[in-house]
Amino acid sequence: MHAIDLWIIGGYLAATALFGILVGRGQHNQADYFLGGRELPWFALLLSIVATETSTVTFLSVPGFTFVEGGNFYFLQLAIGYIVGRLLVVALLLPMHFAGRPVTAYAVLEQRFGIPTRQAASIAFLITRTVGDGLRLFLTALALQYAVGWSIEACVLVIAGVTGLYSYYGGVKSVVWNDCLQFAIYILGAIVIAVLIIQRLPGGVGQVVEFAQETGRDRFLDFTLPWLETSGHTTFWAGLFGGAFLSLATHGADQLIVQRYLCAKDQRSAALALALSGPVVFLQFALFLAIGLGVACYFTEFDSAKLALPGDEALASFVVNEVPPGLTGLILAAVFAAAMSTLSSSVNSSASSLLDDLLAPWVGHWSDKKSLFIARLLTAAFTVAQAVVAIAFYRLAAQEHVVRQVLAIAGFAAGLLLGLYFLGMLVGRGKNWQAITALLVGAAVTTFALYRQVDGLWFPVIGCGTTFLVGATLTYLTPGPGTATSTVKSPG
Image (tube, rainbow, N blue to C red):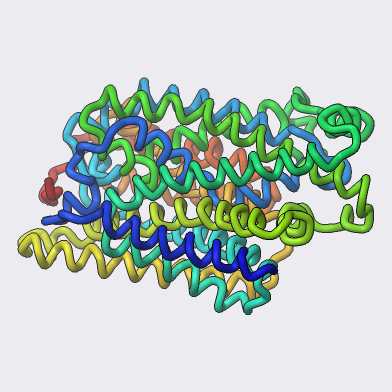
């Protein structure tokens, strides 16, 4: 790699850390650190929501769905479900989150069932979030290794170190405003890639379109019924129902995203940010899939041997080997921007959930200064934990498509938690043992689905449905007053 590219990457990482520290100044307590004073504007929250769920997995792995032989745009069907799911969150779950203005997504479960249920939900979130985002960190380190030749361990430490630095000092305000910057960077990087491909191909856009038609990569919708589906790719029904339930769960019952709109000044601002994020994600997916198609067309024209590359590596290979100096650094900075936006949000929300959901009975009486210190310490701890997961994943040499693994992990826990939310909404107050039993049965059934190699996009549907039905049945068979009494005080 040219020296100018390394300077651009290094300068970007340093500027990101400095910017995050500067905009995150002025924190006085735990609520400032985790909620930004509940005064962040809706457009910043919109970009933060999109950037948070747009990791390196999206930037590098999604183009692989159209790059590989037999590829297509079927993955875009998932974004249709995303749009539907977010609108349902606005209508069904958002009012519940703003009723008491809690700090975390799981305070609502305490009101319906009790403290143990809230804590069980938080533990499920913390485990799956750490593992899933550890995989995202691994894929980002893979891109950095491809560019500079360092070991995976060194790449993980650099990316995690920079992200953890500004997350530690700046809190959620730093995370949100850095997300806005990183959104602009990675979209600019994607557009630069697309323009370069079109300019270099003799036939321009027309050649890409013709290539898509000739190779069948232009396919978008597949209405095959679930019980007849054997191809292994995303169908319309898996995308619609799986995507809607996944979005319902991740944006309605997952602290990573719920924390974003709890930072809004009111419910209307939160609803606007959440509802508009769906169409923006759809357009992003379309752009990244189109880039994967363009890279396949480019390699077919100029270097057909590279068509054998795995889908996750194709775009990284194009950026490092085909993009001129200067622009390579910009695009790789965009890759890191996509990763850091997710990782910073993840460690901040995880620290928030652990502190407010699990440790509050022990630290609730502490001074603002001491609580703020503990919040920062936990942020650093989760940064280290995700780095450990990334390195462990590399050592295990997993070969599956990373994006599907990440979605499966996210859907596993999020569906279970969504089932608890629906149980509380539709059945009302219940007992802790009923909710936790439903959660465990839902986890067991979803694990069986994993064992049977069911598409991970169905995990939210399976987990949510099982948890709700078991909980509703137990509540009906063993009626009685719940134990949902709140003793944990949320800061702010």
